[in-house]
Length: 324
Ligand SMILES: NC(=O)c1ccc[n+]([C@@H]2O[C@H](COP(=O)([O-])OP(=O)(O)OC[C@H]3O[C@@H](n4cnc5c(N)ncnc54)[C@H](OP(=O)(O)O)[C@@H]3O)[C@@H](O)[C@H]2O)c1
Image (cartoon, rainbow, N blue to C red; front, side):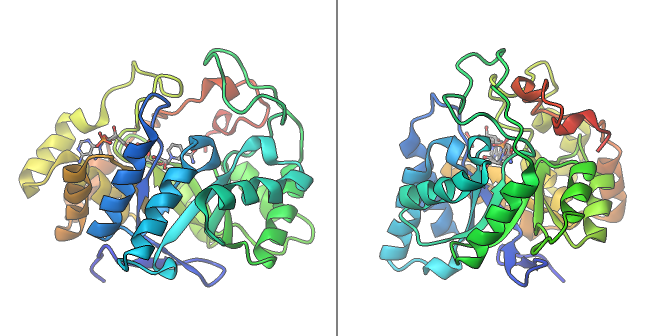
């Protein structure tokens, strides 16, 4: 089946997710209204999946954009697939719904399409939402994610979210969640870093075997925000082999980097606040990589994580200590 911008993948709870999503994270120095403007442009262009999070600090603006596009008749609420993320300071079961309600209030929406645990571990609720110093570790808490998950299941039952999932979970953590006694709903997805340098083939195979879809972030090589990313890493969109493949198809490196992930059956998130790039990135649906070029790109894998999130490394549940 040919992929289009309207293609959706069915989730294990019967709902479905559009295969391309707009990323909305930007560094704190980027004015929040740029995300609002970009989201409106993206919806006009046909993006229907918006990925955001409480910790991005921009749900008010992204909500404004979505509601503006509903008000002017471009879309209906049910056309939009909005993903929110439960930040780690809200993992205590009594705080989960409060965290969700804060997002809903900021967005001025009645429900989220997908709500995911942002990380597999908790952070103390008091004053540790963002690091003032990127070299300083977060104040860790020890809430068991079993309790967090049960509270998320209740949010789904209450109709406040359509689907629930996780992000940044490794295989061991997924296995543990799936073996939770009394599990009512399986996570529908695991949102993880995934691109030509980090193919996630083993994690994808495991998730496929459990009917959990992968959603890829940093497909274009990340936002390279110095607070989160190791800036000594190579710039993905400048890779010479990627450039060769792109030239062959007369496409940009960004389009080929995204197309590669889409053809692996993985949902792609891509962030741009630039109108021309938002448009260009939808060009991924106008060509197809042949098996030989897919293989060439697969061989670029070097298990490179741009997002090391070093403030979290001390935590025993930091997911990237495991192979995958
Ligand atoms: N779950 C998690 O823990 C997690 C972690 C990281 C990210 N995410 C989500 O995933 C989204 C995407 O990941 P990301 O923000 O790391 O970065 P990304 O999508 O890999 O890359 C974004 C960067 O690529 C640039 N760009 C976009 N289109 C381009 C094009 N056609 N040509 C050249 N450059 C282009 C953007 O610049 P302009 O904006 O200037 O165009 C921006 O600097 C985030 O926004 C967020 O929603 C989730």
